[in-house]
Length: 260
Image (cartoon, rainbow, N blue to C red):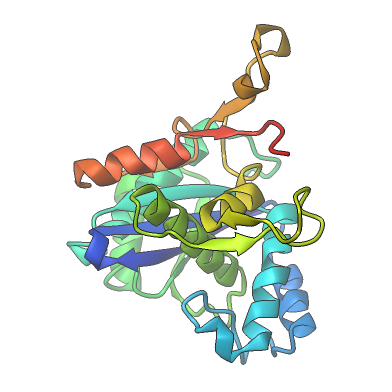
């Protein structure tokens, strides 16, 4: 049994919602529970929230770091971009994105459980009706209006959605923050780098994507790219043109070559 977890990051001032699927061939409950405990949080009681003000909580900062490791070790990522209005459009668009992933990706598991955070659909019943209409025949068991304190994998989806939304905001020119490269980065630890570069570098291997082109067709390392658009990226046709263009520029292809 495989596991999909979906959460969203909402940006009404920029007229988009970015949703993310975190997929694992095994349940994420164990790895996330361990990450929370190592951060001083109690699974089932406390939770990681990307929207929390990190300066006020060392536990949240620690949990973010541990959950990034969970993503790298266990997850594949799908991205869905939709307008912020109507608010509930993200639910059906997420199901279209899921359909795309299921139709194009290879899985070890023959069936999947799919968990959606609260507020993605108007109700659990509405979500089930949409799933029956859009994903009919897919080998999935759907769970709507789930509590991220209890379904711990949703906290990973929350982190991915927030991270990818920040990358999209940077692509739109709306985030211009730098961070220190830090130790074990391959760069001078005190060097400044754009925040979106650090975020991208941490996720770039995990997107649902095609394989890279054959090595004998490369002209340089720059050809070591994979196609995400045809597998792991769904952009609503209702999105503003500038959002579509930025999402395609940021996520449609992913460079996997050397960055040092």
